Image 1 (cartoon, rainbow, N blue to C red):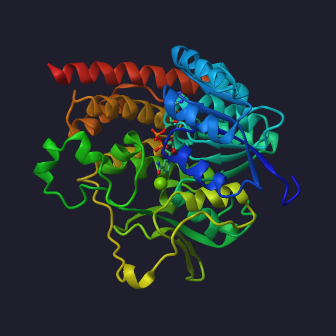
Image 2: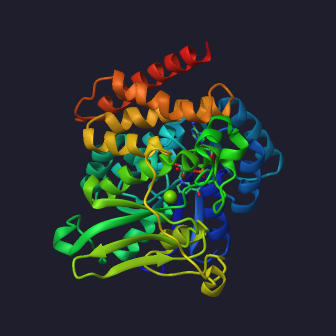
Length: 398
Ligand code: NAD
Ligand code: MG
């Protein structure tokens, strides 16, 4: 695509935290971006508002009943947007020939199929949905390489690493003079809570992140540090780095978004206010830089930055993620699925916060790990782990 040409975009998950931040950046640059398709799960009213503002050619609701309501609203308002529904429609709008850029911002395993479809179709993929890489890293990366798709990480840490690696980095850390990747983590809302108080924390406390405003699932993941665990696995696939070359660094201020350590002693970091519009704007405009609406970083206000090693006892989920990465094969898919089920049960008041890691540990211990040769291996592991996790949750409730 020639530089400066209008970019045509599908946003998978446009009503979420990343989706709405993406539209905020897009709205600042009508001369650069055109929205072709928006998608959501069930949020009719917000998707309708987005259709009014951005006039996409397509809008997809996963839910059929929600699609019927949206279709009526759009028709009554005389808006020329075609309303589709279902999983196949998510894939359909991810591969439209008129679309060059796909923002993958659905939460969880639900994002896998449409994101993979975009990769196979050779789109420029702005990847927020880290679960795709955690579940099906080799299948997804093969699809990216096979089609010549461009992959730009939107997760703030991976976006920072991408920026700190040499331009055109080809997947060989040693050849690029890189010694380690340093993945920063805020430590979430429970970093300093007395350990015995962790039993009683509520979903709302877990979702009250000190630095970032995010969807509820990733907020709980941040509180358990499973988010950082998923990000270690994500970094493995994005940058071809093994577990021993990815160091998690707890940095409570969330100003340094991650770092790359080189063999000559140089350490390159990307800094900024904790606002996802920065990595989103980077991805949207790459290789240009555009205004993201983000306030400039005031270093005098930041004043102090701290760094501590992660506490694996307080955050067993982080240890489980490293364990799954080292086990490889379907282990990360098992981890991810068990985590999704456990987090949903915690948010629903069925289990306690500490039960989340217990459920995942039990699932990892009880299910076999197989090599990933195709998507079927991944989907099979995902389904098995969900069943095992639900059984474990039922046992805990009794
Ligand atoms: P969110 O819950 O705010 O939004 C999720 C979006 O996905 C919504 O538009 C929702 O309608 C849609 N969705 C949910 N379930 C669906 C399903 N079954 N089928 C189709 N669509 C569905 O989530 P978020 O915080 O925006 O996170 C999105 C992704 O980005 C996650 O993978 C998350 O890990 C990643 N991410 C988020 C942040 C952040 O700051 N929020 C930062 C880094 C990475
Ligand atoms: Mg992140």
